[in-house]
Length: 330
Image (cartoon, rainbow, N blue to C red; front, side, top):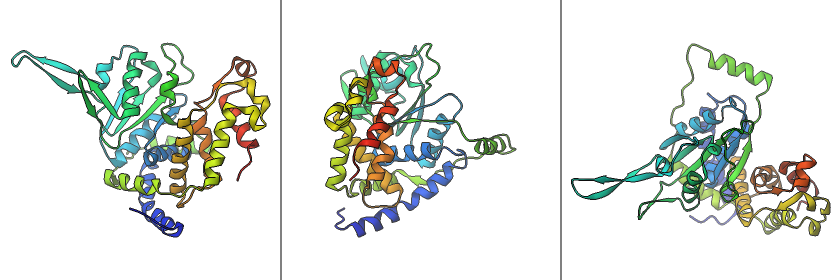
Protein backbone atom coordinates (compact mmCIF):
# COMPACT_ATOMS: atom_id res chain seq x y z
CA UNK A 1 0.00 0.00 0.00
CA UNK A 2 1.88 3.08 -1.29
CA UNK A 3 0.59 6.63 -1.13
CA UNK A 4 2.46 9.15 -3.24
CA UNK A 5 1.21 12.57 -2.22
CA UNK A 6 0.41 14.38 1.01
CA UNK A 7 -3.13 15.00 -0.30
CA UNK A 8 -3.69 11.25 -0.77
CA UNK A 9 -2.25 10.58 2.67
CA UNK A 10 -4.46 13.22 4.27
CA UNK A 11 -7.51 11.67 2.64
CA UNK A 12 -6.51 8.14 3.72
CA UNK A 13 -5.86 9.32 7.28
CA UNK A 14 -9.21 11.10 7.52
CA UNK A 15 -11.04 8.02 6.22
CA UNK A 16 -9.21 5.64 8.53
CA UNK A 17 -9.44 7.92 11.57
CA UNK A 18 -13.25 7.77 11.46
CA UNK A 19 -13.37 4.50 13.38
CA UNK A 20 -11.47 6.20 16.21
CA UNK A 21 -14.45 8.45 16.92
CA UNK A 22 -16.66 5.44 17.69
CA UNK A 23 -13.83 3.91 19.74
CA UNK A 24 -13.29 7.07 21.80
CA UNK A 25 -17.01 7.69 22.33
CA UNK A 26 -17.45 4.09 23.52
CA UNK A 27 -14.57 4.43 26.03
CA UNK A 28 -15.90 7.82 27.16
CA UNK A 29 -19.13 6.16 28.28
CA UNK A 30 -17.12 4.85 31.21
CA UNK A 31 -14.13 7.20 31.45
CA UNK A 32 -14.93 10.81 32.35
CA UNK A 33 -12.33 13.44 31.49
CA UNK A 34 -8.81 11.95 31.21
CA UNK A 35 -8.68 12.90 27.50
CA UNK A 36 -4.89 12.83 27.56
CA UNK A 37 -4.85 9.34 29.09
CA UNK A 38 -7.22 7.95 26.44
CA UNK A 39 -5.29 9.72 23.65
CA UNK A 40 -1.96 8.28 24.83
CA UNK A 41 -3.43 4.78 25.01
CA UNK A 42 -4.62 5.21 21.41
CA UNK A 43 -1.15 6.39 20.37
CA UNK A 44 0.28 3.22 21.92
CA UNK A 45 -2.26 1.13 19.97
CA UNK A 46 -1.58 2.88 16.66
CA UNK A 47 2.22 3.06 17.02
CA UNK A 48 2.56 -0.47 18.44
CA UNK A 49 4.23 0.79 21.61
CA UNK A 50 3.85 -0.26 25.24
CA UNK A 51 2.48 2.33 27.67
CA UNK A 52 3.26 2.86 31.38
CA UNK A 53 0.62 4.70 33.41
CA UNK A 54 1.60 6.28 36.72
CA UNK A 55 -0.85 7.79 39.16
CA UNK A 56 -2.32 7.47 42.64
CA UNK A 57 -5.01 4.81 43.21
CA UNK A 58 -8.55 5.47 42.00
CA UNK A 59 -7.82 7.52 38.87
CA UNK A 60 -9.35 4.93 36.47
CA UNK A 61 -6.01 3.76 35.05
CA UNK A 62 -7.05 0.11 35.13
CA UNK A 63 -10.60 0.93 34.02
CA UNK A 64 -9.32 2.93 31.01
CA UNK A 65 -7.13 0.06 29.79
CA UNK A 66 -9.88 -2.50 30.34
CA UNK A 67 -12.48 -0.32 28.57
CA UNK A 68 -10.20 0.19 25.56
CA UNK A 69 -9.54 -3.55 25.30
CA UNK A 70 -13.28 -4.27 25.48
CA UNK A 71 -14.00 -1.72 22.71
CA UNK A 72 -11.53 -3.54 20.44
CA UNK A 73 -12.46 -7.15 19.62
CA UNK A 74 -9.26 -8.51 21.14
CA UNK A 75 -8.02 -10.95 23.76
CA UNK A 76 -7.46 -9.17 27.05
CA UNK A 77 -5.67 -10.41 30.16
CA UNK A 78 -5.23 -8.60 33.44
CA UNK A 79 -2.24 -9.73 35.52
CA UNK A 80 -2.04 -8.48 39.09
CA UNK A 81 1.65 -8.13 39.89
CA UNK A 82 2.58 -9.16 43.44
CA UNK A 83 5.89 -9.85 45.24
CA UNK A 84 5.28 -13.63 45.14
CA UNK A 85 4.58 -13.72 41.37
CA UNK A 86 6.77 -16.17 39.43
CA UNK A 87 7.80 -16.05 35.76
CA UNK A 88 5.74 -19.21 35.16
CA UNK A 89 2.63 -17.37 36.42
CA UNK A 90 3.19 -14.91 33.58
CA UNK A 91 4.49 -16.87 30.59
CA UNK A 92 3.46 -20.43 31.45
CA UNK A 93 5.41 -23.59 32.17
CA UNK A 94 6.05 -27.16 31.05
CA UNK A 95 3.87 -29.83 32.66
CA UNK A 96 5.03 -33.43 32.85
CA UNK A 97 2.62 -36.08 31.59
CA UNK A 98 3.48 -39.45 33.27
CA UNK A 99 1.45 -41.43 30.73
CA UNK A 100 3.49 -40.28 27.75
CA UNK A 101 6.72 -39.46 29.60
CA UNK A 102 6.67 -36.08 27.88
CA UNK A 103 6.47 -32.44 28.87
CA UNK A 104 3.73 -30.28 27.35
CA UNK A 105 3.74 -26.49 27.38
CA UNK A 106 1.00 -24.71 29.31
CA UNK A 107 0.77 -21.13 28.03
CA UNK A 108 0.33 -18.36 30.59
CA UNK A 109 -1.85 -15.22 30.53
CA UNK A 110 0.73 -13.29 28.50
CA UNK A 111 -0.62 -15.01 25.35
CA UNK A 112 -3.17 -12.29 24.59
CA UNK A 113 -3.41 -9.08 22.55
CA UNK A 114 -3.65 -6.65 25.45
CA UNK A 115 -1.87 -7.30 28.73
CA UNK A 116 -2.77 -5.12 31.68
CA UNK A 117 0.21 -5.39 34.03
CA UNK A 118 -1.41 -3.96 37.14
CA UNK A 119 1.00 -2.46 39.70
CA UNK A 120 3.96 -3.66 37.65
CA UNK A 121 6.52 -2.41 40.17
CA UNK A 122 5.34 -4.93 42.79
CA UNK A 123 6.92 -7.92 41.03
CA UNK A 124 10.56 -9.00 41.60
CA UNK A 125 13.38 -8.81 39.02
CA UNK A 126 12.97 -12.38 37.69
CA UNK A 127 9.38 -11.63 36.66
CA UNK A 128 10.43 -8.32 35.11
CA UNK A 129 13.10 -10.08 33.03
CA UNK A 130 10.50 -12.57 31.73
CA UNK A 131 8.27 -9.67 30.72
CA UNK A 132 11.26 -7.93 29.09
CA UNK A 133 11.64 -10.61 26.38
CA UNK A 134 7.91 -10.46 25.64
CA UNK A 135 7.92 -6.66 25.35
CA UNK A 136 10.97 -6.37 23.13
CA UNK A 137 10.98 -9.54 21.03
CA UNK A 138 7.21 -10.19 21.18
CA UNK A 139 8.00 -13.80 21.99
CA UNK A 140 8.49 -15.93 25.10
CA UNK A 141 10.55 -19.03 25.83
CA UNK A 142 9.05 -21.95 27.76
CA UNK A 143 11.62 -24.68 28.32
CA UNK A 144 13.53 -25.06 25.05
CA UNK A 145 10.76 -23.74 22.81
CA UNK A 146 10.17 -20.14 21.75
CA UNK A 147 6.61 -19.04 21.06
CA UNK A 148 5.60 -15.95 19.10
CA UNK A 149 3.00 -13.77 20.79
CA UNK A 150 -0.26 -12.54 19.28
CA UNK A 151 -0.25 -9.60 16.87
CA UNK A 152 -1.02 -6.99 18.02
CA UNK A 153 0.63 -7.49 21.41
CA UNK A 154 0.63 -4.55 23.79
CA UNK A 155 1.64 -4.21 27.44
CA UNK A 156 -0.28 -1.48 29.25
CA UNK A 157 1.16 -1.22 32.75
CA UNK A 158 0.15 0.76 35.83
CA UNK A 159 2.20 1.77 38.83
CA UNK A 160 1.44 3.68 42.01
CA UNK A 161 4.01 6.41 42.85
CA UNK A 162 3.10 6.95 46.50
CA UNK A 163 3.09 3.47 48.01
CA UNK A 164 6.71 2.31 48.06
CA UNK A 165 6.44 -0.52 50.59
CA UNK A 166 6.83 -3.88 48.86
CA UNK A 167 7.73 -2.37 45.48
CA UNK A 168 10.74 -2.93 43.22
CA UNK A 169 12.10 -0.17 40.98
CA UNK A 170 11.70 -1.17 37.33
CA UNK A 171 15.05 -1.95 35.62
CA UNK A 172 16.22 0.84 33.31
CA UNK A 173 16.27 -1.60 30.36
CA UNK A 174 12.62 -2.37 30.90
CA UNK A 175 11.52 1.22 31.47
CA UNK A 176 13.19 2.09 28.15
CA UNK A 177 10.95 -0.40 26.35
CA UNK A 178 7.83 1.56 27.21
CA UNK A 179 7.15 3.96 24.36
CA UNK A 180 5.26 6.35 26.65
CA UNK A 181 5.07 7.02 30.37
CA UNK A 182 1.85 8.88 31.13
CA UNK A 183 1.37 10.62 34.47
CA UNK A 184 -2.35 10.49 35.33
CA UNK A 185 -3.76 13.37 37.39
CA UNK A 186 -6.92 13.94 39.42
CA UNK A 187 -10.14 14.85 37.57
CA UNK A 188 -11.54 18.38 37.81
CA UNK A 189 -14.40 19.11 40.22
CA UNK A 190 -16.95 19.14 37.37
CA UNK A 191 -15.60 15.85 35.96
CA UNK A 192 -15.74 14.20 39.38
CA UNK A 193 -19.38 15.23 39.75
CA UNK A 194 -20.15 13.44 36.47
CA UNK A 195 -18.20 10.40 37.73
CA UNK A 196 -20.31 10.31 40.91
CA UNK A 197 -23.58 10.52 38.95
CA UNK A 198 -22.53 7.91 36.40
CA UNK A 199 -20.99 5.36 38.76
CA UNK A 200 -23.67 5.52 41.46
CA UNK A 201 -26.69 5.34 39.13
CA UNK A 202 -29.09 2.45 38.67
CA UNK A 203 -27.38 1.10 35.54
CA UNK A 204 -23.62 1.06 35.09
CA UNK A 205 -22.42 1.83 31.54
CA UNK A 206 -21.18 -1.12 29.48
CA UNK A 207 -18.57 -1.15 26.72
CA UNK A 208 -19.43 -2.77 23.37
CA UNK A 209 -16.79 -3.96 20.87
CA UNK A 210 -16.81 -1.36 18.08
CA UNK A 211 -13.67 -2.13 16.06
CA UNK A 212 -11.87 -5.30 15.02
CA UNK A 213 -8.17 -6.17 15.13
CA UNK A 214 -8.16 -5.98 11.32
CA UNK A 215 -9.29 -2.31 11.54
CA UNK A 216 -6.45 -1.62 13.97
CA UNK A 217 -3.79 -3.40 11.91
CA UNK A 218 -4.83 -1.54 8.74
CA UNK A 219 -4.80 1.80 10.59
CA UNK A 220 -1.25 1.02 11.74
CA UNK A 221 -0.19 0.57 8.11
CA UNK A 222 -1.54 4.04 7.31
CA UNK A 223 0.18 5.51 10.40
CA UNK A 224 3.56 4.14 9.29
CA UNK A 225 3.24 6.03 5.99
CA UNK A 226 2.53 9.44 7.53
CA UNK A 227 5.10 11.88 6.16
CA UNK A 228 7.96 13.05 8.39
CA UNK A 229 10.09 15.86 6.93
CA UNK A 230 13.88 15.84 7.35
CA UNK A 231 13.62 19.05 9.41
CA UNK A 232 11.32 17.24 11.86
CA UNK A 233 13.82 14.36 12.13
CA UNK A 234 16.62 16.87 12.82
CA UNK A 235 14.44 18.55 15.47
CA UNK A 236 13.95 15.17 17.18
CA UNK A 237 17.71 14.58 17.12
CA UNK A 238 18.31 18.06 18.57
CA UNK A 239 16.00 17.22 21.49
CA UNK A 240 17.55 13.80 22.09
CA UNK A 241 21.15 15.05 21.91
CA UNK A 242 20.28 17.89 24.29
CA UNK A 243 19.57 15.21 26.92
CA UNK A 244 22.98 13.60 26.31
CA UNK A 245 25.25 16.59 25.73
CA UNK A 246 23.39 19.62 27.08
CA UNK A 247 26.45 21.92 26.93
CA UNK A 248 26.85 21.36 23.17
CA UNK A 249 23.20 22.34 22.73
CA UNK A 250 23.62 25.62 24.62
CA UNK A 251 22.09 24.16 27.79
CA UNK A 252 25.19 23.94 29.99
CA UNK A 253 23.11 24.57 33.14
CA UNK A 254 21.41 21.18 32.63
CA UNK A 255 24.66 19.17 32.43
CA UNK A 256 25.05 18.62 36.22
CA UNK A 257 21.39 17.57 36.48
CA UNK A 258 21.52 14.63 34.01
CA UNK A 259 23.53 11.45 34.62
CA UNK A 260 22.31 9.62 31.50
CA UNK A 261 20.35 10.96 28.52
CA UNK A 262 17.80 9.30 26.26
CA UNK A 263 18.72 6.21 24.23
CA UNK A 264 18.37 5.88 20.42
CA UNK A 265 15.11 4.05 21.12
CA UNK A 266 13.73 7.45 22.22
CA UNK A 267 14.37 8.91 18.73
CA UNK A 268 12.56 6.01 17.07
CA UNK A 269 9.63 6.11 19.48
CA UNK A 270 9.27 9.87 19.17
CA UNK A 271 8.84 9.63 15.40
CA UNK A 272 6.42 6.68 15.70
CA UNK A 273 4.34 8.36 18.43
CA UNK A 274 4.31 11.68 16.52
CA UNK A 275 2.93 9.88 13.46
CA UNK A 276 0.17 8.36 15.60
CA UNK A 277 -0.55 11.80 17.12
CA UNK A 278 -0.83 13.31 13.62
CA UNK A 279 -3.19 10.45 12.65
CA UNK A 280 -5.43 11.24 15.64
CA UNK A 281 -5.55 14.86 14.45
CA UNK A 282 -6.50 13.74 10.92
CA UNK A 283 -3.24 14.77 9.24
CA UNK A 284 -0.99 12.85 6.84
CA UNK A 285 2.15 14.67 7.97
CA UNK A 286 3.96 15.35 11.27
CA UNK A 287 4.37 18.92 12.56
CA UNK A 288 6.73 20.25 15.28
CA UNK A 289 3.64 20.57 17.50
CA UNK A 290 3.14 16.78 17.34
CA UNK A 291 6.71 16.35 18.60
CA UNK A 292 6.25 18.91 21.39
CA UNK A 293 3.01 17.24 22.51
CA UNK A 294 4.40 13.72 22.84
CA UNK A 295 8.04 14.49 23.79
CA UNK A 296 7.40 14.72 27.58
CA UNK A 297 5.75 11.27 27.60
CA UNK A 298 8.52 9.73 25.46
CA UNK A 299 11.40 11.27 27.44
CA UNK A 300 10.37 11.60 31.09
CA UNK A 301 11.22 7.99 32.00
CA UNK A 302 14.40 7.81 29.92
CA UNK A 303 16.43 10.48 31.68
CA UNK A 304 18.45 9.38 34.70
CA UNK A 305 18.74 12.51 36.84
CA UNK A 306 21.68 13.21 39.16
CA UNK A 307 21.76 13.52 42.95
CA UNK A 308 22.19 17.23 42.39
CA UNK A 309 18.88 17.38 40.53
CA UNK A 310 17.17 15.42 43.32
CA UNK A 311 18.67 17.77 45.92
CA UNK A 312 17.32 20.75 43.99
CA UNK A 313 13.96 18.95 43.58
CA UNK A 314 14.26 19.10 39.79
CA UNK A 315 12.40 16.25 38.07
CA UNK A 316 13.08 14.67 34.68
CA UNK A 317 9.82 16.29 33.47
CA UNK A 318 11.20 19.73 34.44
CA UNK A 319 14.39 19.05 32.48
CA UNK A 320 12.45 17.89 29.40
CA UNK A 321 10.32 21.04 29.53
CA UNK A 322 13.41 23.27 29.71
CA UNK A 323 14.86 21.47 26.68
CA UNK A 324 11.59 21.90 24.73
CA UNK A 325 11.48 25.60 25.67
CA UNK A 326 15.04 26.29 24.54
CA UNK A 327 15.69 24.09 21.49
CA UNK A 328 14.80 25.97 18.32
CA UNK A 329 11.67 24.71 16.56
CA UNK A 330 11.94 24.27 12.75
